Amino acid sequence: MPLSRSSLFLPVMLGFAMAVVSWPAPGQEPSSVDESPIGVEEGIEGEESTDDLTGKAPKSNLPLEELQVFAEVFGKIKSEYVDATSDADLLNDAIQGMLSGLDPHSTFLEPEAFREVRISTEGKFGGLGIEVTTEDGRIKVVAPIDGTPAYDADIRSGDVIVSIDGQQVRGMDLREAVDSMRGEPGTRIVLTISRDGIPEPFDVPLVRAVIKVASVRGSLLEPGLGYARISSFQSGTANNLRTQIEKLERENEGPLEGLLLDLRNNPGGVLNSAVDVSDLFLESGTVVSTRGRDNVTDASYGSRPGDILDGVPMVVLVNGGSASASEIVAGALQDHGRAVVMGTRTFGKGSVQTVIPMNNGGALKLTTARYYTPLDRSIQARGIEPDIEVRQSEVRELGRRQSVRESDLAGHLSEEDQLLEESLPVEEEGDATEDESGEVVVDPLEDDYQLREAVNLLKGMRLVYRQASKRG
View 1 (cartoon, one colour):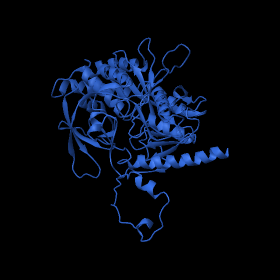
View 2 (view 1 turned 120 degrees about the horizontal axis):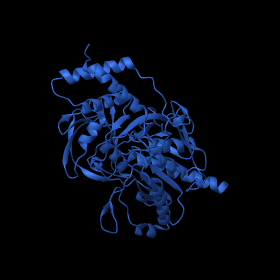
View 3 (view 1 turned 120 degrees about the vertical axis):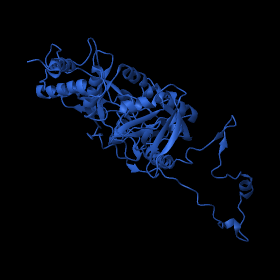
View 4 (view 1 turned 30 degrees about the vertical axis):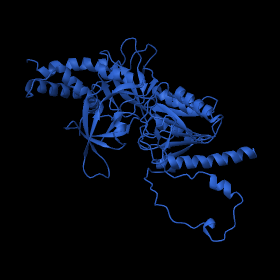
């Protein structure tokens, strides 16, 4: 009996499956990443699972009946589909479909995509500066990155991308959607966005750019109180944060009395960076642990002695755009009682992806473990609940009321320092100021309600800390 095309294809599929079992390319070890929903990746070193001391990959029982069905479907597509299809395209699509059925973060990276992953961890890549994930077949924004086209266009965490240049994206593969948003710097693109509270989708025109992410910036909120903003966790973020804090202390002409660490809309980044940032403020103990299906992917990351702030008060600001590495830092500082976490519940991205290099120059990115905070709380799909919930709100001045003071009353007693009081300048609330270059400087607390509340909390914590220090 002549063999059918599908039966001829079965041995090929068996060989393909056997090859998949031996993960890394010769001479290469798989590496693990904790992926922010898309864009900046997070990396830790991983090890290959072995079943003995010879280093051979574990054996796998192949599902022969299911592979026979696969081979039959493959053969039917090749012989009867309306258009001619290549073997490579069909197999690539089969791999992507196999991985997309697992979770939103497992995927196969073509060589070019794998190269971009490596570039992104260095803090430079092309595109819009927007971190996205998939949810119920929709492409959803996790967070825009500070100073990028997406940030400047006011794209927000929670926005849903309906179409890209008029092409509907519902049901589109995440990598395909990301590739559509990337392109040559200077080229234009239009995203159609659906946003809660706005009845109809609306268009957002953008211009692609080379995204260079400055992951840390900071300023003095007032004498003694520092502000540090981390927009993503890159390989040098912890060192940059240390440098920024030292700069603030020089500007303050003395040690800081409090620090506000802003992790809002931070989609994640390099895992080791999150551990190192947490370590800056902890004296001892676990920062984060990972657990997988077996002990091979289990790991624990600890802190070393030496709090660079010597225990002064800290407030960590988070929101729904704080994901992955941001949640590791917030969870570690919260569990150790080192900082008060304020804002809204975080994204809930608490899984580890292992990047396994393939022979063709690409890589398999596979979810292999979950994150746990020092108090053994799972981050996955739960996020970090803030100690104090503060939702972003718009606060407006109700207007000035005509009030009567003692000085307005007829025959009031004169103030001894009245002449000095009259010589003081009158401050107008809400006025912008100018810096030395003459540029207008807008107070960031003016329009940021969460930040304003966090500063007020930090001021109160500083007072308590001062009193406790005096008693001590």
